[in-house]
Amino acid sequence: MFLIGQRVAPKGEFVGSVGEIKSWLISQDFDPSLFCTKWILNHYRWIVWKLAAMERRFPQSLGGRYLTYQHVLAQLRMRYEMELQCSKRPAVRKILNKDVSPSTMTILCVSQVLRFKSKQQDGKTLTEVRLELTDGWYSLPAAVDSFLLRLIERRKIKVGSKLMICNAQLVGADDGVDPLDECYDSSKRNCLVLLKINSNNTRLARWDARLGFVSPKYNHHLGGTFLVKSLRDVIPDGGTIPAIDLLVCRKYPTLYLEHVRDSDQ
Image (cartoon, rainbow, N blue to C red; front, side, top):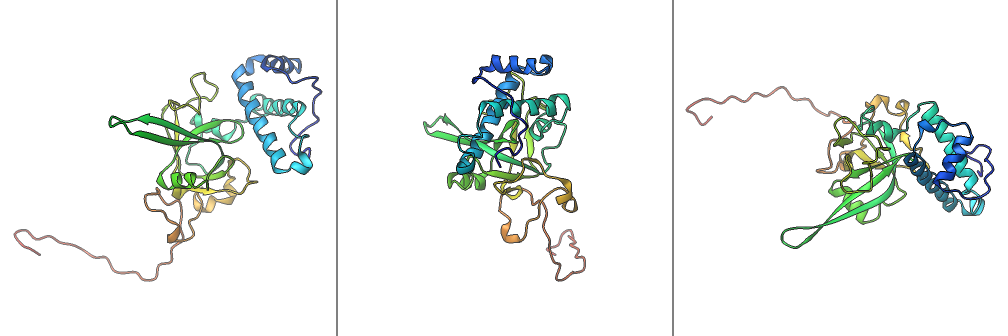
């Protein structure tokens, strides 16, 4: 369990700053033209978040041994090789670049519950609630409907919850946006893009579900969506229904309606 997802950890004498981490990457013969300071800060955040979450989930076996500077450097090396050298972009970056449809079934994790307050003309304070969702590599803000908002207030959806989402919509930035752009910040109210999700197309995923796109082999027969088991699971005003099995009990012939002028019939 201790070395799941890890390679041989590099030797690190001390916890380095961003500049020291960048110098270490360059010393490993990594091309400095492929990454920037924001790339390091972004991945440093999600690597620490992931390793710390693993320590909290398995405190007896991983406590104090998983979140280390050496493992952070090992994860940075892995992400550089996968994303920048092999050009294998993660799910959120593909969605933000608009190279993949946001309606694709994806599993994302709630990293923040964002609350933005504003005063109306009548003096009342209006609170807007959003979710910051991540695939472990990058993040994007998400707008929720009234039913999902109630689940958030009841803490059924909270930081660390994993959501299986399909038929989402990406609003804003018609030509797409890159998460490494200086103007992009998923935690700000004025973020350039917003992922709109609704309750009928959102489900809680298992705590150990793998983040990212769901393999088509699990849902190709459903058109890339998940199955709603019964009509009782359909939420009014919860958006479109992704897929449902219905049993037709009786088929009636076609009916016609004819309106006759100057007549009540």
